[in-house]
Amino acid sequence: MTESDPRLPPLEPPYAPDIAAALQAMMPKNSPVEPLRLFRTLAVHPELAAAMHALGRFVLGRETAIGVRERELVIDRVCARCGCQYEWGVHASFFAARAGLSEAQIAATVHGDAEDAAWSEDDALIIRLVDELHDEAALSDSLWAELARRWSPPQLLELLLIAGWYHAIAYIANGLRVELGFPQKN
Image (tube, rainbow, N blue to C red; front, side, top):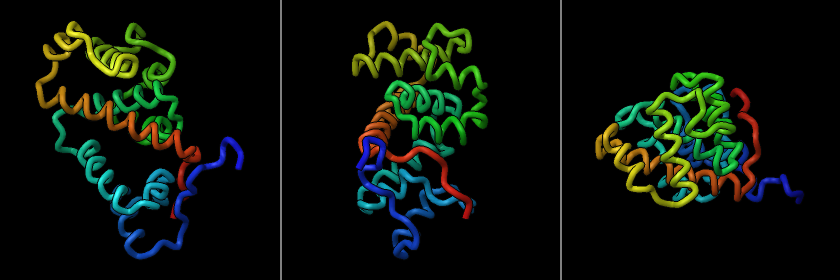
């Protein structure tokens, strides 16, 4: 094993029927690509994968209190701060354009800070939220007051949850050395 080899290889087809159904449920409906490597790796532990899928569906769902742009900005920044190339690449490639993030903003999730010219005032607050949580595992009272002036309590809870959730995803992907790259079309 080299330092770049996955520590738990993802499941490969043919899948057992229950695993195939679970993997299909994790992907967008009628997706033309194989399930993501992270999903196929999590499927090694079906109960854990099912639990993670439930929260993941909420976070990426359409019935959330925050918008897609805010969600993706949190995800991209968390993954960048955690050095999680795998998950950052998935979201930068598949969701960033839909979220209205420009190429300069996508790059700034990795190389910028809250003062970057790419960010609006709201974007900069989200970058600060992620950075403080990453650096301190807490938020200062002053930042919290600024966030609370802009977002409602349900939105603030979601922002915190998404930051923590993708921190966990980054730990899993990095700890297991999930291989970079995108799945092939079926």
